[in-house]
Image (cartoon, rainbow, N blue to C red; front, side, top):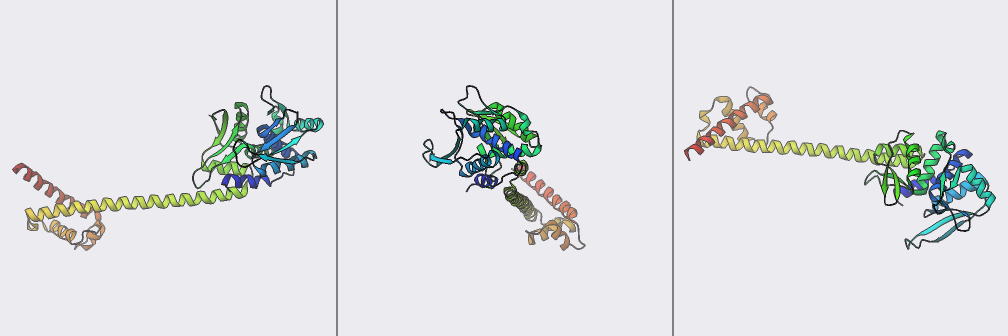
Amino acid sequence: MSFSGTVKEELSRQISTARHCRIAETAALLSLCGRFTADGALRMQTENSAVIRKYFTLVQKTFNIETEIAVRENRQMKKGHIYYVEIKDDALIRTVLLATKLSREQNSGGTLVLNNSLLIQQTCCKRAFIRGAFLASGSISDPEKGYHFEIVCPDERKAGQLQELIRSFGIDAKVVVRKKSHVVYVKEGAQIVDILAVMEANVALMNLENIRILKEMRNTVNRKVNCEMANINKTVSAAVKQIEDIKLIEEKKGFQSLNDGLAEIAELRLQYPEATLKELGMMLNPQVGKSGVNHRLRKLSAIADELRVNKEELL
């Protein structure tokens, strides 16, 4: 099962003890996955069996409505199934719509819209509505590959309502138009952790946090290794250049032309090509610090550069 499916499975098992929260979650499910059929039934439809079970339980516990889950093949995708629950009794439909503050949208083919924000004034009801919206048409990427949370809305109005709700928890939700849909999304890993907390997906939250910590540790280790490799390469390149300079001096002038300090460091560098500046300094008598060794090697480099210039002039 995908990470998104795992989160939905966890959320589908959560049934709020507060009736007003169950109503808010039912409203979100119906506003994104509900519609009126041609014969006037109120249908909630989804491709996720866990989500339809959640809706079935919410309707049963909240409104004491006995109904059935129906299944048919997904003809469009040519794989999987479509699950739906229908309420056909007009009185029961009115009860559900009155409680959820939903109404039928004009010229929309039977879809529903939330027309009263009083339903989601309390913080717990906001959480429930966001949870229902995610169950209805949300997804979350595998955190091993990247961080992306989104809920697909059919129109700008619903996307705006949902964005405002999510932002009320301090989460920077944004909206993008994708084909004919408006997508409310969150990209940053820390904020996706926050929205999982808002929806009360605590198991998924801990799993995501563990993955984030491991990824950060791996990234930190990789950065340190890359930094150390860069330093090693830099040190090796410098040592190669120093040895070339010293060999040129030895060939053209000989070490007897150098003062004792320069001659001593030149011989040590040839003898210990892989030694660090600190190690070279400790081999000198008396010992010299890194800056002192570097100063002498730079003097040798300057002498070698002069010899190269003189050679070019002679040519």
